[in-house]
Picture 1: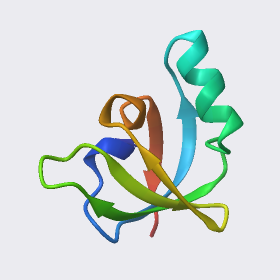
Picture 2: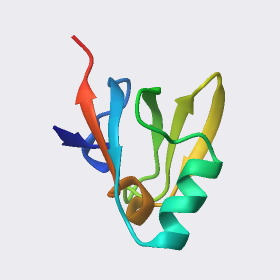
Picture 3: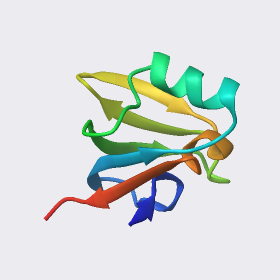
Length: 76
């Protein structure tokens, strides 16, 4: 298991779980961050916040705090 916030640029994985409080979790689900989705880290800001990922065919920008709620399994 690896958190999305710990990905390196270009790293891919599959979302296995989404944690967090109700509002944050609901917001992530509404944006398509759900278990089973493939995710690739595209860009990271110089200080690591925010990050940009490709998910379900579109680009999504997440805060580091949001990315810490996303558990993944690295692609093989």
